[in-house]
Image (tube, rainbow, N blue to C red; front, side):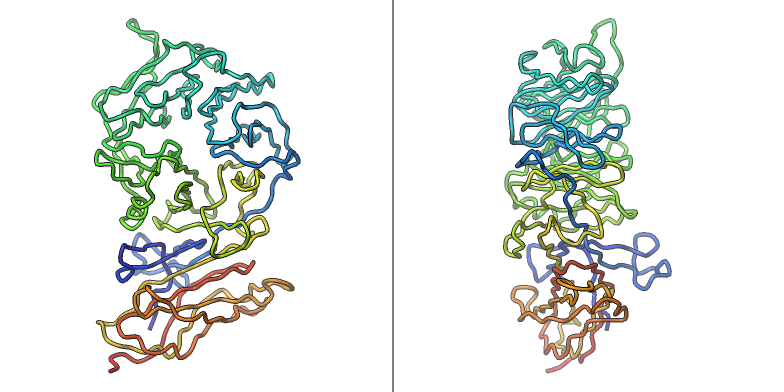
Length: 494
């Protein structure tokens, strides 16, 4: 009997219905279309589980920084600009750092807006302009008061468009392509009544103005006879979903993704399709989000690897990170731990993201270092990664059944030559009550290096009255792939 061992994260309010976890693992598909039952692309199974990438140090942190700021990485023309603590730093492709400016804050998120000749940096207390042509850093705190509190914005046609917090207003720079000159009169406001303006995002030469409960579409029409202000609203277009977290907005593969909400306050992860907001989160993810309380601090980034596009959404206050695989429509969870303790797992430690010279670079929320994220790295900055998969419930018309043996199909032969991981161990537990309680830990070797035909077998797991649920955990610094499982036993026992 095949066991539905492989899948994504889907835990409902009642574990008896569904208690699936997928932590630091993600499903990789090998089938045609949207239905894994309709044949495979010559692969052994339609879906397998791969481990998520690990992290290694990219910069040596010679300046002793403590915090890589949220949103504080931006790549432009092969150069990485990083806000770490209160410093704007230029990082080359070898990881060498150069300080180029000092901010008035050392904590909290930042927003970096790139123009043609300069960067605009917003931190909620001041504005800063770095001219990368003249290598000049300017503190804008003496220029305009309204830019002091700005925390989010975007760029279109020579203009930085910034949101004034706790209002419906937004501003643009006075002179085209010049972030140094601002005028209080260069502003406009959203015209719907659905709450304050939360964020603005340029997409396909249009501006999506996200309020709390709906989204307006604006565009650059150029100055007119009536007004020199170049931005106008597209009449007749209104998306009836707003934004719950200003730093959750990402553009990737011709679409906008964000953590949205409607007039009722219900939060979902959304994607724009033809000016329509389409949910990509499922009810299990949305149920978890509703339990997090304040989600306005959530932030996201996207990246691509091995044909997959990932939307990585972190909730700092809730200490959780959830990842939507845009390619497969599956969700999984990512965790990190500082001291290598399973009990102290929390959100993923990536606090910002940029792609530099073919490398995925993350800012570390814990150490202030810049890290490279890569499949083939099997720990995070020297600390263990904990992988976990809790399966679907196995049952047969509510009849009792026994499991005499359980065979798990893995990628064998991944053990290291010496040291930790030379004899990698996999832990299994099973539940007979829908995931409420679990058995003792059962350990098996994954096989030494070169044992490519290795599989895992557990015997005499006992009698199950209604259902069986299995949980795997793995923390060895080796590759890890699960392809499926099969069980043998008897059904209809009394």
